[in-house]
Image (cartoon, rainbow, N blue to C red):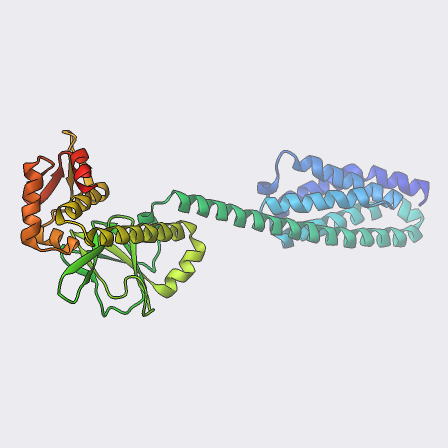
Length: 368
């Protein structure tokens, strides 16, 4: 390239920069300008003229790459940025082609235009690639942040809050004595006890009721489609006013995949219930009513006890003697007699169906 043309190109730098800054502000606005924008644009103009003179466009394209990423982070639309880049090249051509050297040597205008168009094409491709890559990176970051936020929210939510936030759950309030589940209810799904207490029991052939589990807040029980499954032929009865949420089996399958918290709750609750069932059934076999009653009262105190200022623990279930008898597979007369014996020993107190543990150590020795 002739020396006088090189000097002319160098002399146009301030004018190209000034006009482009003005055009940039007019087309994109000040919202996309920060304190570093003028310096970046000045360097872009400088490197463009260097690329004209030397034919080495690596530094220029590197700056265009950076500009695309910065503007993607700023939330600029790609078409607007491509228009701004095109305007930059148009201004550059207008200023360069207006220099006096081209009046004297018009044959130089063609190679100048060809080089400018070649740079324009490579700059547009670089801008498109960098902007698109950065947008994809932003999308991945946002997805990861959403995942972290969702995981944190789920990990810090109680099961009750989680359930209430999921539309596929049906939440029902049950009065005391109401059957939440009974044989013949064949809609498969999972029940969550949100408040109150629910007794799981089975009716024997002789008409006696055997309690398999006593559930409180946060516990779960299920109705499945299988013929030999846990809770298939059992009753679930609200022992007091209770709120129970139900979700269909198909909806639950999808939910378990997306909520590890819910899956952990289900597994933990079922494990506890199986342990309870085994313990309750073992207590019925070959043991006295007094021993079985003592163990039952201790379990109820652990699960539903309210500590009093006196140190006593009140079982907050308001149970009748018949309900206790049903839990033990016994009869009401026998249970009433054993309760009175425990009361005479000052191990418990009874006040209008409310049982309080007065001497836990003594009751534990009796039930051992």
